[in-house]
Each structure stands twice: as structure tokens, then as C-alpha cells.
Amino acid sequence: MTLLFILWIITAFISIFSGTYSIGPLEAISNLDELSRTIFFQIRIPRVLMATIAGGTLALAGAALQALFRNSLASPFTLGISGGASLGALLAIRSGLAVGVLGFSMVSISAFVFSILTMLFVYTISKVGGVVATGRLLLAGVVANFLYASIVMFIQFFSTFTESLQTMRWIMGSLDVVGFDTVWKTLIFVIPGCAILLSLTKDMNLFGLGDDVASSLGVNVRRMEKKIYFATSLAAGAVISVTGPIGFVGLIIPHILRMLLGVDNRIILPSSFLLGATFLTAADTLSRTIISPVEIPVGIITASIGGVFFLWLLIRTKKEIII
Image 1: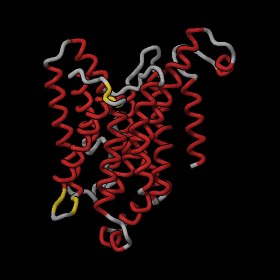
Image 2: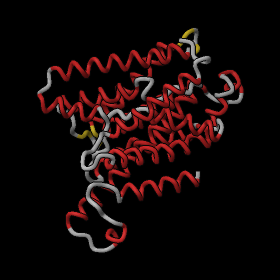
Image 3: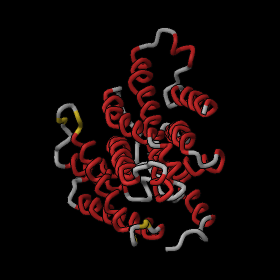
Image 4: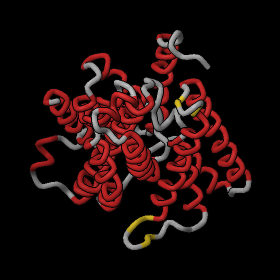
């Protein structure tokens, strides 16, 4: 994990000093002019922090869901959780509910409610005889995604050109944040969600041996499942309400780490956060510089990488998946 942390530090450093407007490290520690100071402290640093939070959270949530369902294809994106959170956030924004309630954003609350309802829907549909069937799990996620996509298109149909353009831009996934306010508000939901997931790593390891074995060793399986549903929905919903549905981070990162580090969730989950943060920070840097000054939504970059990886994963595990 130390190496992963160092890798994130290097990636974050490169990202902060990359962009259309050139700011060098030596210039940053000297006196910056007003424009450079604004770009550096109000755009670059908050953006890198949001990429770290979003990438780490989505990867951590994906690792937890894969451990829960014992399925390497499970992630917030493939199970429809991202789609549910996106729809919830979009409905809140379009309804004019972007205001705060008791200090909490209604957009984040709506995203959380829709994401946890999606989780419950997918889990209920995929259960056969008290056991989660892998094929039904994936199909339920696909159905949820198509259902949410149809509702989003319905909303788009009755939108003005400006609203439609804003929605389309948001759906593509973006880390275009200004200032630290959004970062702190996102952390209010992300920190408890991630803390809950990290506290369950030992139980996840025992659960991997089977329900009966885990129960005999003192794991309250139903309580653990409910905690994972709540925590992943809370953390992922908060991130998606800000960034939009950035896909495949929660699928790629945990799977790569399991191939490299084994199946111990006490190592996989925190490592997933660090590598996910590094991956999304690097993807965002690429999106800002690949055809500068035009900025590509980061969701396009992650989808391009994730789509190829997902196909490879499906081919690799085709004998294990029966749909």
C-alpha cells in the first residue's frame, strides 16, 4: 500500500501542474499572480482532490460489492447503482431541490435514496431460493440501467436546449469543480460510508468461505449485508451526485488488485481506494490535456478503458458465468 500511496502522490503532483494554463512547481511556491492563484487553488487542487475522492470511493465500493456477491463483475456501474444515483441527482436538480437541508445537499440525499433502492431491487430480483444467482444479478443490473436511461431520455425530451446540453454533459461524467466547498460536502457522506466498508473487511473474508461457515464463526451475515448496501449507496451516491456516472472504476481496480495481491479484503479494500484515486486522477489529467485546450469528459476516458477491460473480463470468465 505504501507503493500505491507514493504512486498517487506522483500522479496528483503531475495532475496539479498539468493543463492548458501552464503553472510550474517553482512558480507555485513563489508569488503567483491573481489568475495563477485562482487556477491553482480554486480549480487544480480541488479537482485533484475530487478525483481522489471519487476514484477511491467508487473503487472501494466495487471491491466491497464483489466481496459481497462473490462476483468479479459486480460494481456500482454494472449493478445499476450508478444509474440510480444519477437519476436521483438529476431529478433533484431539475425539481429545483439543489438547496441544502440541515447542511446536507438534497441532490446527494436523492442520489443516495435512489442508489439504495436500486441495490435492494437488484438484490431481490437476483435471489433464487435464498441464494444470489450470478446471471440474474447481472441481468437485474442491466435492466435497472436501461430503465433509468429511458427515464433520463424522457426528461431530455421535454428539456430546453440548454437543460439538455447540461444534462448530457453531466451524464458523461465530469470532475469540473470550483473551490473546496463541494469537496467538503461530498466528504460528509463519503467518509462514514468508506469507514463502514473498511470496518467490515474481516467479516468479508469469512463470508467468502460461505454463509454457513461465516455464521458459525460469529459473523452476522444479514447485518453485514445491510451495512454494505447502506455504505456503498451512501458513498457512491454522494460521489455520483457531484461527478455524474463515471463508469468502470469500481470494476477495473478491484479485479486488477485481486490478480496481483490475492483475495484478502483487509488489503484489497484500502488498496482499491488508493489505486482508484490514482487511476481517476490520471484519467482526468489525460482528459484535460490529450486535445488541449478542449476538455474531454473524464467519463469517456474511463468508459473507453473500462469497456475493453470489461469485454476481456467477460471472455476470461465466460465459463463461470451462466446467464
